[in-house]
Each structure stands twice: as structure tokens, then as C-alpha cells.
Amino acid sequence: MTGQQAVDLIHQEAWTGRKPGLSRTLELLDRVGNPHRQLKYVHITGTNGKGSTAAMIAAGLTAAGLKTGLSTSPHLWTFHERFQVNGQPIPDEALGRIAERVIAAGKGMDDPATEFELMTAVGMLWFLEAECDIVVLEVGLGGRLDSTNVIPAPEAAVITNIGLEHTAELGNTRALIAAEKAGIIKPGCDAVLYGQSREVEEVVEAACREQNVPLTRTDPERLEVLCSGLTGQTFLYRGSGPYHIPLLGAHQLYNAAAALETLWTLRTRGWALSEDAITQGLAKTVWPARMELVRRSPDVILDGGHNPQCMEALSRALQELYPGKKLVFLTGVLADKDYHSMVGEILPLAKEFFTITPDSDRAMSASDLAAYLEGRGAQATPCQSTREGVDRALAAAGPQDVVCACGSLYMIGEVRHLLGLC
Image 1 (tube, rainbow, N blue to C red):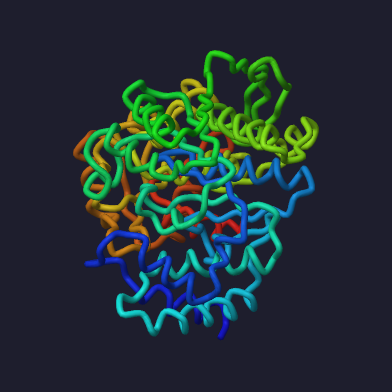
Image 2 (image 1 turned 90 degrees about the vertical axis):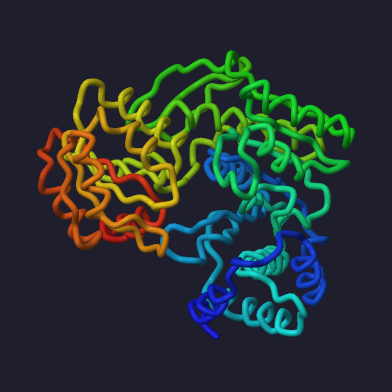
């Protein structure tokens, strides 16, 4: 079985109508030898910044000479990106072989495993086979009932910025969502929290007291920016540094603080992480499609932000990098997202919009999105394909202009492919 054949079979196992819980994942993992019990982890949850924080932590661990697994979702272009070891995606042969084993194990279950539960088992088996020293594991949805939460106490449980998303599943307040995400905190781990509203912090503090877990909060006041521009950002944090990250946007500095606190926490737990390794790792971090500058003259920025908080961060970053400039936007959204607020964040920055329909059954059509934007006073042109959207956006931009593709990760992967980046 090839990797793609395995992926096609896994995608057939939908979540719809299934009861949330860990029992299916535990049974499936038991059927393949409980690989999750034989690995060490950094477990990461949150609404925004999970992937960027995970990538920076993994880069620091790799730079220290540790064989580091990184599990994230969704992928941008190929499914293999979800499971990386020292920055390299799982090979197709291994994906096909391991997924075939997992799918076969799941066939005998009375309550069949879902798509994400099958993916979780594949990742655990690959990281064990690859002899990872530690795995940076991103939660899929929530925390308490997410299938990744079958792991034993991680070395560190990390909670990034929390906003209102997936409210039907997680709750309609930040406090309720924080309680679900704090479910990854287990006795024996350390916890790291991205400093944010007291509403969220109080929930996480209570969870840590209940589990007798030490908690470290990031301190934005101790972050000093030395320089910031299109080549990245250099900063001091808690008097240490300087550190450089190639990721753009002020929000990435706050994510970097969470990554630093996590790496420092791991060091106190006995992991050999020198300051030089941490510095080198941050500087080498690669995390595509998050304020990613991929072309100059015109500048082309790709960002997979897909909720209002992400789009607010994108808007701030664009204004910092290109003060006073109007941009050409290529965008597509999912109809079940708060697209009113999302596009509202970038409307004041737009010269014009080109809209596309993301490759998802939840997508809003390009024509409907263009009509909505025109109703809010913008110039918007619907495109029949992502290829047409990319071509028309680039053609509309002069050498001094900026094109920003944003709105949905479902489209950004295809845009990167069309630009020859993957």
C-alpha cells in the first residue's frame, strides 16, 4: 500500500455522528502495541499559535542533537507533513506500511476509530520506529477529549493563546474553552501558559493546583524587540538573548516566548539544552504559510490564519511591515467560519480582492464571497480556480505592491504549490 492509498482509506473514516472520547484511540493503540507509552512528549494545545510554537520548540530540540518528532495538523500540501522527524516528513513507504497495519488493527473494533484517531496511531508508531528522543505533539481539537490526550504525563503541557473557536464542541466562553484545553495537564508534568486574559489564566492555574503541577507563564513585559522587518525579528526575553526568529509578526514574538519558556522548563527537567542550541534552533525555525514572505517585487505574503484572532494578527503585522500601503488580497474562506469578522480585519488594508473557493465541502463560493465584499464597499473579483486567482492577483500587482493570500489553510497549500514552493 502506498502512502496515498493509505491516506485515502483513512479519510473515509469520518468523525460525524461519533461520540467524543479516548476509548477508541486507547483500544486502537493497544491493538498495535501501545507505542504511545514508550515515548516522551511536549504536548501543545491552544486556539492560535500552536503550530508556530511547536515548530520553534522542535527546532530547538533538534539543534540540541535530540531526535525530535513533530506532529501537527492540518497539513498544507501532503499528508506526510503531519509526522516529521528532525524536520523531515514521514517517507511514503513508511506511511503506507504503518497505516496499513493501523487500518487492519482497527477493523476488529466494535466502535471503529475515526480519521484523526487512525492518524494519531500512525504517528505514534512512526515516532517509535524512528527512535525519537522526544515528540512535540500538537492537539487536534480541544485537549481533554482529543485523541492525542491518551499519552502519559508529558514533559511539558503547553497552552498557547486561547480564543473563541469550535464553540459547539468546546464551549462559548474563553473560560470553558480553557477548561477543555487544560485537560492535557497531568500529574508529573510541567505546564507552560502563554500569558493572556485573567479569565483564561485562572482556569489554567486551578487545573495546575488540582494536579499539583508547576506552572510557568510567559511575561510579555520582559520581551524587548531589537529589530523587526522582512528578514525576521531579533529580541531579548527575560534578559536572555539576543534571539532571532525568521517568522514575521509581533504575535510570533509572543509565541517565541512560550517556546523559550518550554525549552527552559525542559532543561530544568534534565534535558541537555544549551543556550547556544536554543538560539540556533529558533533562528532555523521553518513554519510555512504563517506570515510567510515567498516572493519579492511584488512582495507575496502567505498566511493560513483562519479565524478572527489570526486575521487581526495578520492585519497588525501587515501594517507594521507595510505602513500606509494598500494590498492586493487573494482570499477564500469556509462558510462556517466567522468570515464577517475575518474579512473585516483586512478590509481597510485592501486595494482589491480576488476570491477563490477553497477545496472543502464547507467552503464559501468565490462568487458569494466576492458579492459579500462588494457589499462592504470593496472591489472584488471571483475566480474559477486557485490558479486563476494566483495569476490575476499577481497580474494586478506592480513591482512595489504587496499580494497577500490568506483566509484558509485549505487554499494556502495549493497556492504554495502553484508558486513552486512544494
